[in-house]
Amino acid sequence: MATPLTGTVIITGGNGSLGSEVALTIAKMQPLVHLLLVARDITHDESVHQVAEKIRLIGPRSLEIVKLDLTSLEEVVVFARHTVQRVLDRIIPPIVGLINSAATLSFVDDGPTKDGFDPVYQVNCLAPFLLTVNLLEGFKMKGSIVLNIGCSAFSEGQLDYFDLHPPQGRSTLSTREGKLRFGSSKLLMSAAMYALRRSLRHTARIPLNICTLDPGVLAGESHLARDLPTSVRVGQKTRRGLRPLVRMFSKTAINPAHVPAKVIAKLVFQSDDRRWLDAEPYYILDDVYEASSVLEVLRDGWKLDRIFEKVMRDAGLAGSSTSSSGLSPSLTP
Image 1 (cartoon, rainbow, N blue to C red):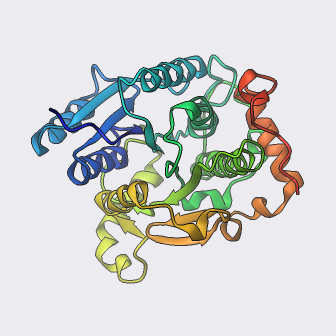
Image 2 (cartoon, one colour; image 1 turned 90 degrees about the vertical axis):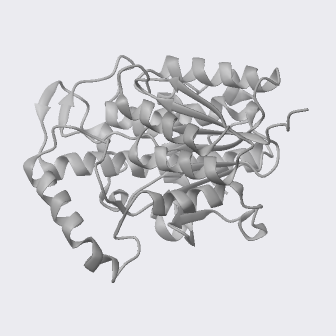
């Protein structure tokens, strides 16, 4: 009789530099986990075939790689509902971890997605938020985690950036503007996700651990964006050359992807730390902080309410059956 699988871990951007390393690490550490990797292109992207082959070389593992375009909110909902139904039908085990690793960095304004949003905002913030909400029924009731991959760039982000800079059409952005756009999307994502955590715990009594992890600057080739400005490409090469020196001063400065991957895999499967049941953890690699000490907006209840309302509305959740069954836009004490 075959040993039953213990849980499902979903990794968006499962073929990316970090997502693929996380998948490989979990495959090595947790042979009885069902890995469900999400990628935008599973037919023509060589990185998809590479991660699948590497996992197969580890040994017999339960693995799926599924196509999902995060620039389509409809696709996100369809994928999530199909996955939940498979959990309810016991085709796959309950979800124990959702790792929102997919992200996009762009220095070109290509105009809005078909849903009408800036693609960087949609992929980095709206899509993971909508995916999390629509997967709720598929999570294991106790000890599950939603781990959102953040970055230090959020510290320079603006909460109202996408309201002030609606997508206009194809134009090239400066290096500074592109980084500000990316940092703003990550700032909004983390704020909205911690707001969701509060709402689920306070109004729906769902103790899902939703938190952010900053993996530090990653060495190697990034899949985040192509056609990078010259200044960004030069900066990446310089950081790679300085990596041994920089690492002497900060362990989060420049790391190969397998370093944060080990931390992420450990966090997904560690027993629930009682210290963080009511507090909100924010991880910088394996160091943990109270999230409000890192994200100032979490200390402003009114402002956080407005962000939560905006993301709920943009994701098409405001007034929906999902919202009325447990999510409350009011988080102010």
